Every structure is written in C-alpha cells, then in structure tokens.
Image (cartoon, rainbow, N blue to C red; front, top):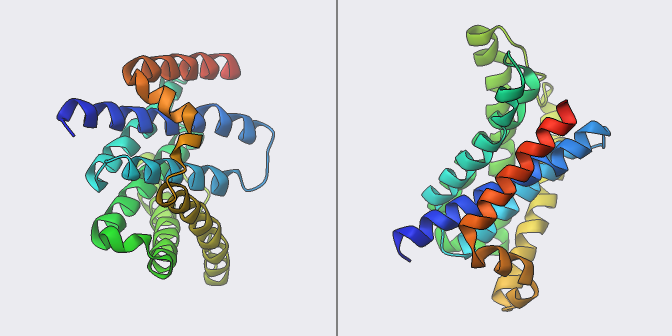
Length: 218
C-alpha cells in the first residue's frame, strides 16, 4: 500500500470516528442517554479495528485517533475558553487510541485469537480508565485549574466497570473478526462507497460536523 493510500485511509477512518463523536455522540449526550461514553468508546475502537483489517498499522491507527480528536477542536472555534466538555472527549479519544495501538503492536496477529483478544481487551479497558482518571484528577487541575469528573474512583467500581466494558468491546471486536474472516465484507457496501473517493468523503464529513457543532451550540 503506497503512502497516498495510507494517508487517505488514516484520514477516512479518523474522520469517520470524529464525525460519529461529534454528531452521534453530541445527540446522545444532549439527551443524556445512559452509557453514552462506553458506547462511543466501543464504536470508535471498532472503527480503528476495521481500519486495521484494511491495511493500517498500529502507528497509522494512532494518527487516525489524532485526526478524530482534532474533529472535536471545532469546539475551540465556538468557545472562548477551554471547558471540561471539550477536553473530556479529546482526552478519551487520544488515551484509548494510544493504548489500543500499543496493544495491537505487541499482540500482532495473535490478537485475533479469542482468548488473547479477551485478555488484551481487559488490559486495554482498565488501562484507559486508569490513565484517563489520572489525567483528570492530577494533570488538568495542576496545569489548567480544571477538574474533570473521574471515570471511577473506588477500586470495586473500576473492576466492575472494566469487566462490563471488556465483554462489550470484546464482542464488538469479535464481530469484526467474524465478518472479515468469513469474507462477508461485501455487506459493508456503504464503507466501500466511502472509500471510493476518500478525500471527498473526508471533506464532506468535516463540513457536516462543523455545521452540526455550530447549529447545536448556537
């Protein structure tokens, strides 16, 4: 895969995740739908994993996550100050992407084994929760004077939440494995259409996301 194809896929999968974070995540948060964070997290990692099946390496997934987080920067153009609501999703996206890319790099092809995937998914989930909580409770208060609501504080709550999130995400990733290993990707015709003209798709999704943010916040 040449550099241009790699770049187009990084942008495509990163912007798709960012678009869903902005539009779908924005709608779910607006109506206070329970477990929105967990749902959007699983959805984002699923998109990265599909990108992995489409030839992207872990380092490319990390760049895609940075693109996705960048989509949330539309908020900076609409607010004059940095807020918790802006930093929260950006921090979550970057944290999850970095940890997932590291785990995929270490596990390699073994990640597709169900038991290894289950173990790696648990490590990913609990690491993402702990790192995010550390940033929220220690780094942001000292640097910006902002206190983000920690993901979890009690040890029992962390373990319980991690186990639930692990099985949800493991199921999602196993579904991706099943689709690609059974060569059922023809059913993802919508994704194929998006990949046909990736730069046009990227531009369209960015513009729609920006308009959505402007309308919702205005």
